[in-house]
Picture: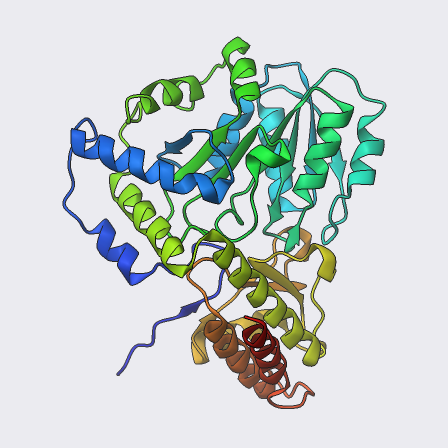
Length: 388
């Protein structure tokens, strides 16, 4: 019997390119060797355009959540006031981290599926004083929202002296990022999303303004102490044992982005796939959760097709058609599924996934014009080709 490989269309982990897998299979060496110093320095330099920064990129052997915790504990002390903008499950993660360390949290919560606008943030900030940091989720994986981070950062700078700390875990590598130009103080991402790697590596960049705050803050953390990472980065190393194989892979990821034509082309591909998915769903009379204006380029949250049991539908897709979508989180469980289109994903993959989705819809006697979703996605793709 032939065993089919699942087509992974999750918001992370995501598929890994063969070249990256091969790069990670290279011989291991000491993380205190000159070979590692050269790998570390070259790799972190290659990552800087993806972050839109000239600042150092710090590599932590951890998942993205640990990097978010590092951003919090290194900048804020217990009892100090922070604002957390939450538009979904992962914004709530930031709230939990801040509360765990005893910060005084002002929570700006939006309904899941909505973005936070600059006007809303300005109104929320104006009556507050002594805010040490504002935590923002750039891309909310649970809802498919891309917050307007550039606009939000501008408001934060205008209304407060607070640091701008951004969770970019599920979009850096697939969405525009201009850390320096937008005035972001700490930007964080993880390896297993748009960066096309297995889980286990997080990337952090820190502004000069944030370093001054960190130097004055008495962090209770040892393993996540960013001053330690900065000190060791100056020597081309990490303070603790790094994920060497993942750094090999990260180096190859950066090379693949260069081969695509540079990071701007990578961003354009993700925007195209977003438009393909959304057009396909609308052609099938299936409603995306979010408005087009704030739609994520890396993940689309889609409402359950009318009259279909979502659990049975996703099981049918995975077991019979071998395409694996993610379900909803929190109170959206059973109400939406999530179509990941980040990292090692291309327009042909979108056409394949939509076609298989249509086959499953047919199995559930869903009323639609067969091929409508594929045609709509293809039209978006062909229009983009003509403009290129």
